[in-house]
Image (cartoon, rainbow, N blue to C red; front, side, top):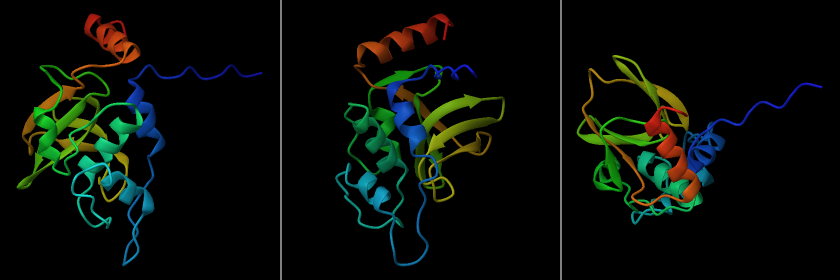
Length: 163
């Protein structure tokens, strides 16, 4: 019998976000019901998957994990939310510029030039994508201001370099 694969050590919201990988827009006049659910967590409450939805996705994920997000469809709204971080930890929310607007998603890792982000509306779907940070401006890394005990404990492990 093959031993079970160990569960990754990650914030509660990352489990929710990973389960959404593969949700994508429907081309044409039909719209993906799940993306409309994402939009319902914002004050914009868009009814089409053609409206940018990265912030709606992050709001929906955080709500599913028991947190209150920004309730805004604007990606840059996350830059002033929660507690800011100097250095990223896996699963924190990363906010960056994207053209004249912004983009938001969940930080996976980075190297000298690229960030790997799990997010919505990345090539019209929920996926992990790389972003060339030489071409973008980082607006910040954030976590909820108050986390549940499990997430807070994990954050403390990340800070000590244990997790």
